[in-house]
Image 1 (cartoon, rainbow, N blue to C red):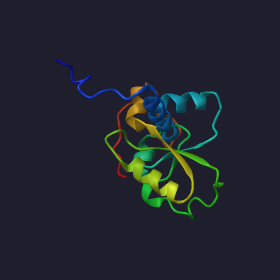
Image 2 (cartoon, rainbow, N blue to C red):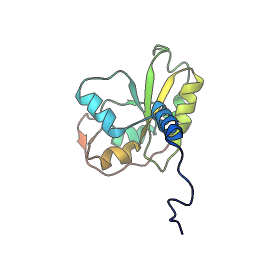
Image 3 (cartoon, rainbow, N blue to C red):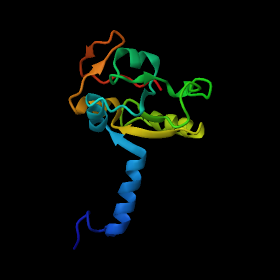
Length: 145
């Protein structure tokens, strides 16, 4: 008898190494973003891909508002071709972040997802900023993407 865990055999160590190493090429997490901000190591552009109202109500400090539907070559013309965009949306329940990542990649930009989005940011205990620049409480905001 085997558990639900072992009914499907685990991948080999080499397969696991390849799989998880590859995932890290496409994602980062809220804690990594927060700590890079605190250390002043901002070598990426953090992008909130939710709608304008959601961004105004509360967003990750330092994020640029760029709703998914507004990601165009014209809108990104000021960014160098080697810019790394880190994108987030409301949270794991929304795939708007993936649509945004596809748009950015189609335009030739490197892109990573900040897994967890706003929900993950708040779960980590970090605060959101609002359009007034002040902190915002911990209530998740509708995505509108």
